[in-house]
Length: 251
Ligand SMILES: Nc1ncnc2c1ncn2[C@@H]1O[C@H](COP(=O)(O)OP(=O)(O)O)[C@@H](O)[C@H]1O
Ligand SMILES: [Mg+2]
Image 1 (cartoon, rainbow, N blue to C red):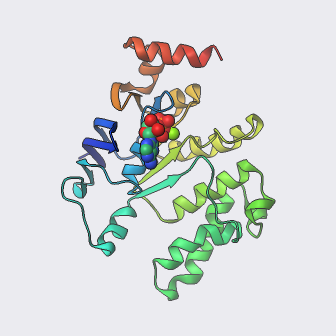
Image 2 (cartoon, rainbow, N blue to C red):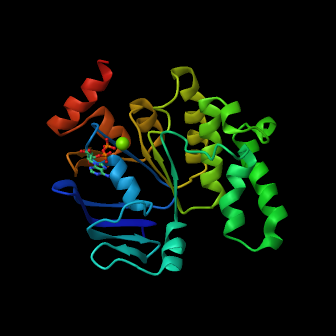
């Protein structure tokens, strides 16, 4: 059984069809990369998966459990919060809480979602996650005291702290100076080698090709091409995919 089944997702904003009919599966332990031009609907798709937008139609199923049916939305807030926990999202702009330290950013949500007796365990786990991200000496720093690459690594630790089934990234390095992208990509590469199930929207084609198992090319709200990441990026079949990839390499 796939860990994630996305079926016939449609999303309109006013009169614009932003997602037209999106369906795909993901196996546990695999990494999927989503590529495509600006405006093709990549962020909207990730936001739908993370319950930040509600699709108008379609279903999202995790480990065989129907989490969302656009035609029949869940209204129970408790249930919604439970369903959200299956996904973690790392944003382009990090979105850390500026008033909290790195460690507090990582532990805030787990502390809110658990019994007070779990506090020590959660704090220890938060420290371990930050250490894994190479931030052992930065736990007490506030976001403004950290570089973009460090902030993004805190954001990754924060997402992992909730133990999501599927970790999603929306262009995790595109707000970073070029010399800082490597440290963030390295951390994601390491997660992939440990078979963390991930969906990564990225314009870093070499990274997508090397790290992802599967790639999807989105164009104007549809999945135009889907296949093994290596095959799709090295040998695209569709004319639009070829155009998109060559426009990137000629920059
Ligand atoms: N909240 C919104 N309201 C209206 N239009 C939106 C909204 N969010 C996204 N869009 C539109 O949806 C389209 C897809 O956007 P997006 O998902 O951000 O694409 P991508 O991430 O691939 O660049 C764009 O045309 C964008 O203007
Ligand atoms: Mg986007």
